[in-house]
Length: 454
Image (cartoon, rainbow, N blue to C red):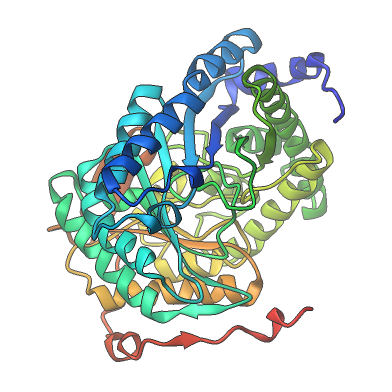
C-alpha cells in the first residue's frame, strides 16, 4: 500500500478549520460468528465479551490520532455480524437479550453507535431472520446505541415483498414504542436493497460474512469543503464544476486514507475501506443541498436538482478513487433530510417533497433517509414507499435504503427534534391513496434482466 506523506494534510488545514471537514466515523467491524450458542444468555455473554475485547482500544486510539493529526473524528462506531446469523443457534423466540448485550458492550467501549442488529432476507427469511425482525421494535426501544437494518431486495434476487410488508409494520411498532422521543427508534432502523458488507455509516452498518475477523472502515465527510470550493465557480460551465468537485474529493479522501491507515496500524486490525460519502450535518455550511444551490438552483428540490446531484455524486466518486485504492461502503452523496440544514429549509418551503427525493435517490448514495412522516401513516403506505425505493436499487444495481420516522401524534407542518447529528425533521406529506391491496399480495418481485450477467 502506498504511504501517505502527512505533509499532504497541510493543504487541508483550512478545510478543517473553516469548512467543516472531518472524519465522520472510524468504524471497527467485528465478526461474531464464533459467539453462536444454543442458550441465548450465553450467546449474549459471548457477544459482550468479544466486542469489548476487540474494541477496547478503539476510542482511545481514534482520540490519539485526532489529537496528533489535528483532524476531527466525530464518531467512533462498531459494526458486527448480522445478529440473525449469530442468533440462529439460540433456542429463543426473542433476540432482545442479544441487543442488550450489544448496547452494554458499545457503552463500555465508549462508542457512539453499534450496528448489526440485522437480517438479510432479500430472497427469503429463515426462522432466525423472522425472530430478529420481530425483535426489532423492542430491541430499539430498550437500547440507546444499537442500530438495526434489514435487506429486503437485491439486483440478483428481486424484492421479498413479504419482508417489505412486515417492515412497514415493524417501523410503525418501533415508532409507537419510542413515542415519548418522537419515534426515535426509527432513526436507528434502515431497510435496504443491495446492502453492502463494509458500510461504516449508521444506522445501516453491519460486518458482512465476507469480511475478515476484524476490519477498520472509515467514513469521510466534507460537504462544507465542496461548497467552499465552488464559491469561485460562478458562471463556469458544469464540466469545470465537476472538475473542481473531483479535485476536492481527492483531498478529502486522502485525509480519510491517512486516518484509516493509522488506526489500522495502531490497533493491529486490517484496513478495510474508505467510504467517500458526503455526509451532511445540521450545521450551516455543511449541507449537500447548499452545494446543489451553489451550482445555480434557487432551491434544492426544484427542477434541475436530480441532474445537479448526479454531477456531484459522480465527481465525488472519480476524485475519491484517485486518492485511495480501497474505496468501498456507499461512497457518494447522502441526502438525509433531518441531518442537512439546506434540505430542512427546502422541505419547510414545500419545494422538496418525497417524490422528488425518490427521484434524487436514483443518482446518489442510499435513499430516503431520516424523513419524518405523519404518525398515522398506514403500515401499508410505509411498505409501499420501501418497495418503490427497493425497486430503484434493484433495477439500477445500486444500494438504496429507507429510514422513515412516522412521528407519533404529529402531522404535516410539525417538527421532530432529535438533536446532535440526527438534527431536526419537518414532518413531510405522503400520498393519501392506499397501496394496501398491493402490499397484501406479498410474494416476490422477480429479479430484473440486469441480474443475468453470468
